[in-house]
Image (cartoon, rainbow, N blue to C red; front, side, top):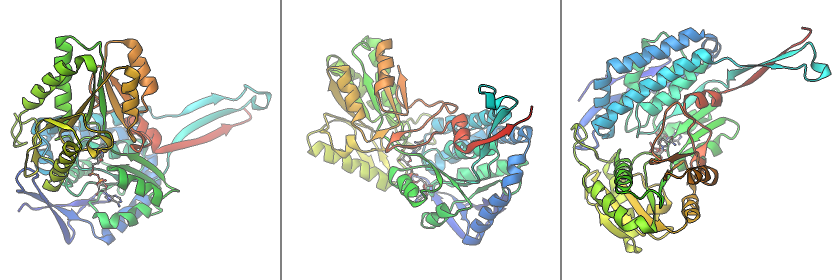
Length: 478
Ligand code: NAD
C-alpha cells in the first residue's frame, strides 16, 4: 500500500497515528492512505484558525491574490497526476476528472481576481439635513473562521469552492473532505503549503464523521459551509442555529422538452445532452438530470432518441479515456439505486433500458411513467437513472417540476423567449437553464438551492458575500 498522505494542521503536514485507507470504486484496489487527525490535531487547527483571524483578514489583497494564483498554477502543473487521483478515489471517468482540475484552477483564479476587487461601498449621507457633512463607508468583513465540509462527488472542485472564497476575503478555514475521497484534498494541501499563506489560515482535516458534531459545534468556528446530503445538512443547521450555516444540498433535477424543440436536430441534441448529463458521474451530481418531461406530441420520437443515446454511452474502467460512465462510489450505493428501480417498476413504471448492476457499476437506466411518490422520482436518485413522463400544457410541466421538495436547477429546451422568461418566473429553483440540461454550472455564477436543497449561495463572488458581513464606518464633520 502507498505511503500515508499527511493531513494539514494549520498549514503543516501531520502524519497522525490513525489512518484512513482509500479504495478504487471500480475494482476495490487500494488507492492510498490518508492521515486522520487526532483530537489534539483538530484542537491545534481550530485554535490556530482563531489566532490567525486578524492576520488573515489583514493580509494585503495582492498577497491573497498571489497565493490563490499560485495554487491554481500548481493544479495546472500537476493536472495529470491530480486527475488520475480524482479518478482513482472517486471512480469518476478520467475525461471528467480532467475537467474538474481545469474548473478548480479557474475557481482559484476567479477568487484571486475578486480578492483584488473586494472593496466595499461609499454612500453619501447628505440626502437628509442631518447627514450633511457625513459619509458612510461599508466594508465586508469576514464573519470569522470557516468550517468547510465537502462531499465525495467533486473531491477537488468542491473543496476549492470552500477554500478559495474564504482565503479571498481573508477568513481562516478548516476544510473537511469526504471519507471516500480525502486524498485529492490532501494533495491540494501540498500546493497551499507553497502559497505563502499565514500559518493557521488553513487546514485540511479528514475528521471521521462521528467526531464531526463536536467540530461543528465549536464556537471558535462561527461559519459552517456544508455541501452534501439533505439529511446531514439540515441536521447541522438544527444543531447550531446561532451559527451562519450555508447548505448546498441535493436535488432531483428536471428538464422540460417543449413542443417548439421539435426538429430532428433539436431532439437529437436534447437526447444526447440529457443522456450525457444524467450519467456523467454515474448520476452522482446534485444537478444530474433525473426527471425528463417531454411534450406529448414529441414523446415517441424523443424517447426513441433518448434510449439510443443512453445505450450508446461507453461504460467501463474510469481510467480509460474512452469511458463515459464509470462506477458509483461503492457497491451499496449501486444496490440502493437498483432497489429503487425495482420498486418503481413494481409500482407500474416501465424500464426502457439499463438497470443491470455489476459491483458498483450500473448500466444507465430509463424508466417511463413512474407513479408520483415513488422514490425514483420523488427523492434524489444520485445514480445513472432517468425517468420520463409527458405533459400537454407547459404550465402542467412547470407544476410537475415544482412538485419536488428540492429546488436546485431546472433545464428547459425551448426556443421561445416567452417560455424562457416564464420558466424563470415560475420555477421555484436556484437557477434555470434554457436550451440545455440543468447540469450546467459556471463556477463564478451564484449557485444554490431553495426548499430542501439548501440555503445560501456559492459561486466565487456569492460565496465571498456569504462568508462576510457589513461593517459600517460613518465619518462626520467633513
Ligand atoms: P454526505 O452528506 O454523506 O457527506 C458530506 C460531508 O459531510 C462529508 O464530508 C461527510 O464526511 C460529512 N459529514 C457526515 N456526517 C456529518 C456530520 N454529522 N456532521 C458534519 N459533517 C458530516 O454527502 P455525500 O454522500 O458525500 O455527497 C452527496 C450529496 O451531496 C448529494 O446529496 C449531493 O446532491 C450533494 N451535493 C450537493 C452539491 C451542491 O452544490 N448543492 C454539490 C455536490 C453534492
